[in-house]
Image 1 (cartoon, one colour):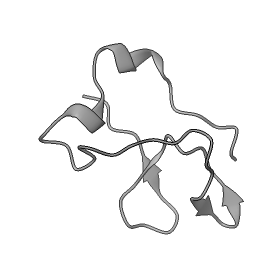
Image 2 (image 1 turned 90 degrees about the vertical axis):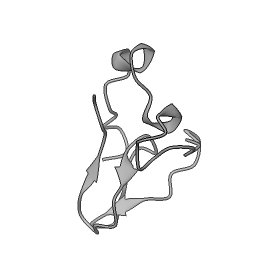
Image 3 (image 1 turned 45 degrees about the vertical axis):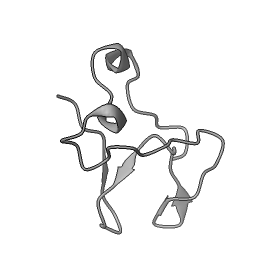
Length: 61
């Protein structure tokens, strides 16, 4: 599961870590540190957590 990555091409149009209205404003992504898990499998660090044990998301505006 750590190999499933969000689609990166949209980053040139929108980055939620720079949007003051985003819940992920100011978040720093460390693409070398795999710490979040789903069912015991590490997931790619680009996915965002919203306090669910089994769901992660990527906001696209």
